[in-house]
Every structure is written in C-alpha cells, then in structure tokens.
Length: 385
Image 1 (cartoon, rainbow, N blue to C red):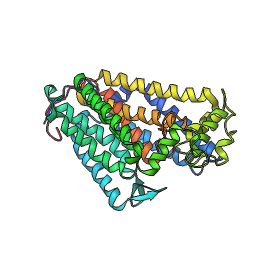
Image 2 (image 1 turned 90 degrees about the horizontal axis):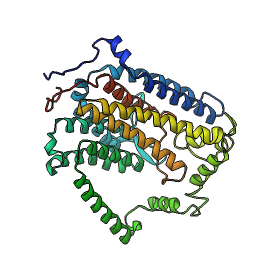
Image 3 (image 1 turned 30 degrees about the vertical axis):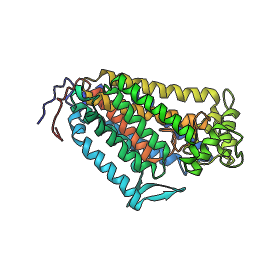
Image 4 (image 1 turned 60 degrees about the horizontal axis):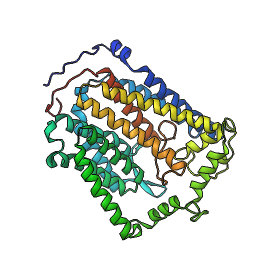
C-alpha cells in the first residue's frame, strides 16, 4: 500500500482545530441568506421551501465536516469508482429518468430523488485530479495524455446535453477545461486549440446557427441578443427579471416587502430566479453583499489550492472551485441578462436538495485538502492506493 508523508494532525480534535473555520462561516452565512430568501418567496412561511432548505443545509454542513476528516488516500481510492457510478446514473436517467417541466434529469431511488448530473460535477473532478496526479508531467501536453481526460469530460457532457441541460453541460466543460489547464497544459497547445475553435465559430456563423440549433435554442439566442424579440413569450421572464432587480434600487424595498417576486411575474422564484427576489428586497447593496461573500469563498478555496503539495488535492480543489464559480457567474449573469437563460441555481441560496448536498460535499473535500495540504502521495499508486 502506498505510504503518505503527512505532517497533519492524526486525531479528530487536531483535525477540527485545523479546519478552515473562516470558509465554514462564510458558507453558513450564505446558507442563512438562502433560508431568509426562501422564507420570503414562500410568502413569509417556512413551507414549502425554507424548512426543507434548512434541514438540507444542516445535513450538508455536518456531512461537509465529516468528509473533511478523511485522508487524501481514501478519496484517491474512490475517484475512478465514483466516476463510473455517476456515469451509470446518467445512463439510468436515459432509461428510467423522471421528467419535470419537460426535462428528464432525475432518478427516483425509492424514498429519495436524485439528479445525477449534480453528482457528476464532483465525480468528473475526482477522475481528472486522480488521472493527472498519476500522469508523468512530460505527457500532460501529449495527444496520448490528453485523449483520456477529453473522454472523461465528453461522455457525461453528451449524456447531460441530451436531457436537455445546457447549463450543466457548460459547467462540466468549464470544470474539465480548468483542471486540464491547471495540470500544466502548454500555452502553445491552448493557443492552437483556441485558434481552431475560433475558426469553427466563424464557420458556424457563416453556415447559420439556425441550421445547427433546435428551434427553442435558437429562440433563446434571439431573446438574448434582442430584448424586444417576442416580449410576451420567450423574452417575458428575462425582461421581468431585470425589472425585478431594478425595482429594488440601492437598498431595496425591505425583507418580505417584495412585490414583483410575489405576484407571479417570474417562474421558479425559489430556484433559478432567487437572486432577483434578493435584489428587489435588499437592492444593489444586498446583491453586492452576496457577490462579496461568494468572492471571499472562492478566494479562500484558491488559497487552499495553492497551499497543497499534492497534485491530486490541488487539482481537486481547483476543479470544485471552478464548478462553484461557474454556478454563481452563470446564474447571476442569466437573471441580469448578461448571459442567455439556462437552468443553473445560485448555490446554497436556491432551493434544491441534490445541488445543496453536492456543493457542501465539494467544500468538504476542499476543507479536507486544507487539513492535509502537506500530504505528498506518490504518483502511480494503485486504484485504492
């Protein structure tokens, strides 16, 4: 069995003392903001969303601390099996998935319903971090070294895109590319691939997007580029989101005093459009506060990644941080019309069981990376090494 050279606490008390409590408190603060907003959009009631969100946050935070206690060798051992299980769950969605609002993304497993694409966001980071940890540095930029990670990213991306879930597909791709880049991919390779991609985009533009995208996807592109396109149809909700955000002004209308968000102008206020409700009630100041908390969370995570001696822990932390940052960037960009509308929640604020648990599990791994930052596992260890 591979031997780890670690200068970290061995006992539970020592590991709890080493926990990055600043990051934990920031996550709790964000979760409390989510509880407050779900209470508000629920009409000043704990049901149907705020109470369930509170319970899930409590379970998720406890699980986060437990996950942080495990040594890196355990997570290295389960990296590939976790990816395979997540991939099988995505296949199961195709076979017997549950459809909600026209999208088939969930699997019923008896008493619980899970969204495998959220699990895959963690699993893909596991697999890539383990792969690059074991890969000799001279092979990182070789074709033979690049093909396996592209397959690791491509297989789930194709399955998720077919659900259809463009937002999660973009998140998977962004996370995978970030891990590959941080693994040491040559700048020359990046420039060549970027040039090819640019040529491809020009070719698509000349050929015409309408010949490639489905009708509803093309309508979303038209809606994004032209706010006046179909104002009572596909552009109604994006325009209402901007109106709701703007109605909050500088300091907002006050907690529970939002009107736009409670009169049914927007769908899914508890998930995709939760930030608009926050902007209406707490204004520009409240929105900036949420962005600042998220920025501090990301800064803490990046600092942890930099401190890790192990390539596995460093890439694992970077990948999870990229996924989290993409959640925030896409959701807020979507509701403020800076990005096209895709179904991406705002982490720890939006309602959703699998998302909340997956995000907190990811931060459990980041907290564990901080505790075990001096661990130096050898390259090329066995499957459970």
